[in-house]
Length: 208
Image (cartoon, rainbow, N blue to C red; front, side):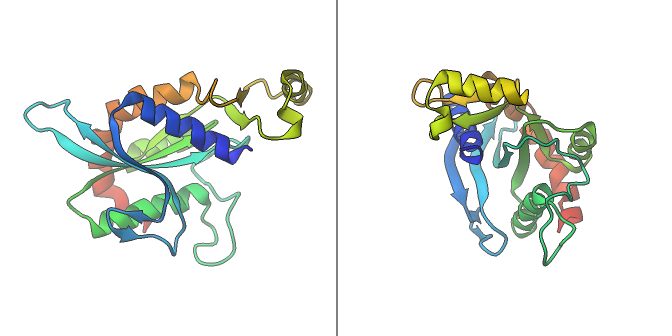
């Protein structure tokens, strides 16, 4: 109900721009690189940057959506799991996947994008220095597919009683995304993907 809603909102926002193609959801292969050992990638899509008409380029955008209540920090160890890289949280595991793809496709421009409800400034600054984009949705979306959400007043009671004022109800097909998600897809990624990808190509090895 929670995780799926974030991915649905992002997928519809990307589709609505008409600028990302092809768009793949929940895949373990990126640019022919098998990532099954490391887990799925939420979205992979192509973006054709024409900001420089004399030098247009294709950028592969890899997106991780974390539609969770907690803030996300550069440390990213709170959700670490046992095993290899045990001090590594989910966002850093995502960046390692992007780094593996970049290593094996050195001539490709790859832009990792982290979409979270709330990003701490430490994560934003890390993205700026490393070459990945960080986007905050400023809202947590949920689906109306559970009994507690079937009536609008039920949703209002949950949101108000818990003090989750940024909770947003998605009720497809009437509402499938938010203005925040649309802004990420139509402005944030297109404006910054190329520059981020060029920085990522220089810094990706730090995440292997």
